[in-house]
Image (cartoon, rainbow, N blue to C red; front, side, top):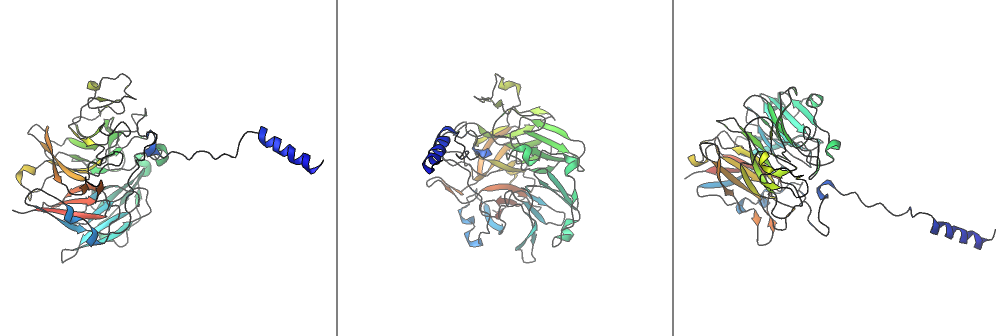
Length: 405
């Protein structure tokens, strides 16, 4: 056969064969599912390197009269949740950087930060029970005993993963699998199990939940259903009711739905996701449900503000008007054309526990004129002296808020 006939035959085969060499489209990351065509909105990447202390934007912070902000600790990339040991050690969890830090005070009042643990998958959930630190890293649950006595050489953990039986990272599909955890007044550990999508029909006994466990992982109890993703919760210091922050879903518009504050009055309440959030019926997933059949939020906290940590103020340093009121960190939006959040607000409650108003407390980190932000508040924590800590995830710093007349 001539060389020309061979070449012609090959050309014909290529024309008639299916086109197999085309590259498959890149998989869509979980956060982008449902993003409108042409949109350039994408998450603001966390800064995961140490920020020099003179670059921590404490000077930008604005507070009500009498309050003051200072840098309590720095050099803590990705800092989020805070738990406190009986001897005063602060433990700080992270997401993307996979670390848990230990922060101690020096005799001169400065702080020392250690990287206590690393290489974990989003260890953002921390609980102290006695001398033991519980670390929740997606579905892994690790208990470190006598931890404050071993900060420079942490002991091997007790692995409680199987006992808790939380959904794995693969089951979550990369969506809302990080944890927040807190110790309840009943001695149980309370946490979130976020939804495994942006918005979808899912197993409502497995995802989009608030759940609680005995510390050993037994006695799982569903505290609330239809909670898309809560990354902050606490119990009222008097009534013991569970309260939680909650993220509204993405890609339904700049101003809908809002993030919310939930008040759980009884175990098993249903807050409506994916069908409703308050009176807002999801146009894609409502399925004809009447929103009045679901529990309503205690307050709405703004669209896409990314509400995270919340704590009741139980100290005595701040004025009486703040006692037993809820301080809420709003980490700040990424999927909104105009930035929202990047602050700390206070939800004020009346004697019946109803939210009467939500007002600004810590502002100044969001630059509306230039659509930039200086830091992202992620957690609040009340110290024993009555001052309050606010973790700044973007700058890897913890701010201390004090009050003096």
